Amino acid sequence: MTSARRAGPTTRTPATTGHTNSPKKDAGTAIMMTQVPRTALDLGFTLVRLPLSVLELVSGHRRDREWAPAMAFTAARATMTSAVGGLLHDETLQARAETQRAALDELRRAAALETVADADEQRAAQQLEQRRAAARRRKREAEAAADDQSRRARTAAEQKERRAAKQAERTKEAARQTETRATGSAERAARRRRAEEITTEKSAVRTAQSARRSKARADRADAEIQRSAAERRKGR
Image 1 (tube, rainbow, N blue to C red):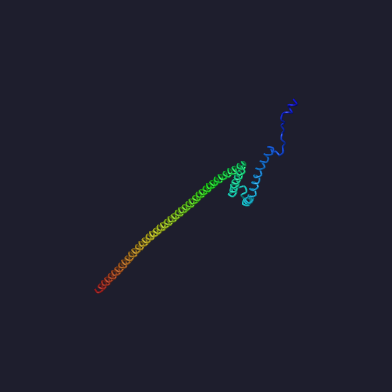
Image 2: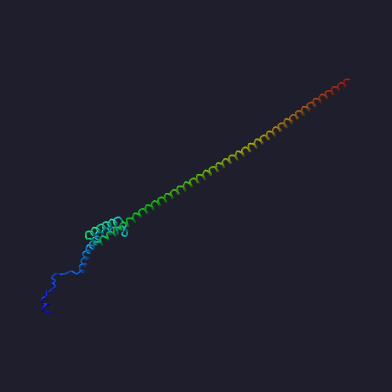
């Protein structure tokens, strides 16, 4: 047994002369090789975005993700991230770029919808203002028509009142004229009657005077006759 063991070939394990990396260390190295570009890329984006962040703060668009400059920066960042991910064969960066693009597309759709909503709201506001203006115009026209109708009615009433007053004045004047004519006729009749009475009285006076003169002549004639008779008797 001893001779056989000596006669057989002897196998030796070769000595390790180099440094052998363990799988765990290789994974860590790979992680470092991908993490460093990602960190550098994120830091670069942060530095580049600083002026835009300051402008957002100053202009009041700090939380406005739909602001055009912010959306433009997001699009540029997604493009750059996708390019770097493609060069480094980094699926994480490429997935991040796709997520950024999807978010950007969603923001763009939201902005478009908001623009449409704003346009609809503006159009509705314009239509409402037009309806209000038309209502105000109709109200003014109705008020003007009512004022014109009231003015016409007032003018017609005044004209009717003036016509009635003139008619009453004419009636009153006609009554006065009638009364005057009646009074004049009565006065003229009275004057005629008085004239007739005076004429009758004058005629009676003249008749009486004539009768007295006739009587006086008759008396003188009778006296003359008697004197003549007396003288004749004396002459006998």
